[in-house]
Image 1 (cartoon, rainbow, N blue to C red):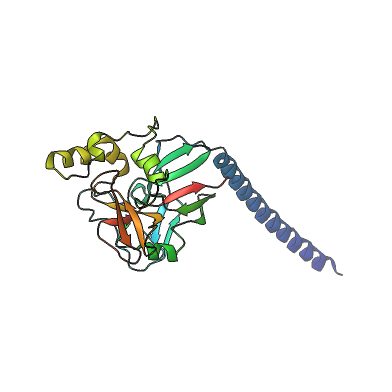
Image 2 (cartoon, helix red, strand yellow):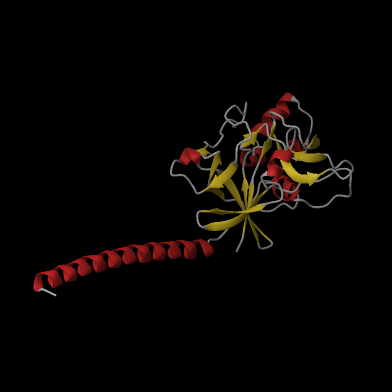
Length: 257
């Protein structure tokens, strides 16, 4: 082999080696960053009652703004058959969902503090695995994305998540306790103002907008339980395939550790 050809091969090999080292360094750097993020999230603490801005709602790959209208609910998107996803937290604060942290009996939950979709039925949520739960990955952490459990008034009472956390029947210190007007299903004008502006509704936003729960009716398996509307304790039934302007989707994330 002549000297010039040998020199050329050595030069090409050096360049190729430099590229390999560079790519390897970048990959290692990215891996270390991801490992640091995962390590930080693993040790993340949950504080009951803390508000967290986290995750972004997508409908058919289109990001959605967080609803903020608690009077007419005009800015809550209507469900039109799209694929529903909650993905990594968007940089824009307006696109970040708002959750309440729950750390109770070693269960770590993020309960959305409002409904984020309307005109959607129990059946439509169930078709996408969003009633009883499916595993999702958001910001490098695994969660079960599901609904709160409710209660069926036609059977013996069992403690459920709506009553435990929204109504707060156990008087959890870091969650607002329901006042008498929060438990009254009457719609007197003076009580309506108190309910709307009360501590409990200011956190959970249940007034005049019910949330679909996991629970099916014990007597009629074609109907389900919705909670909230006239009061925090209010419970009603709805057919699984029906949808309404004032019944919505309130997601829950259960941390998988």
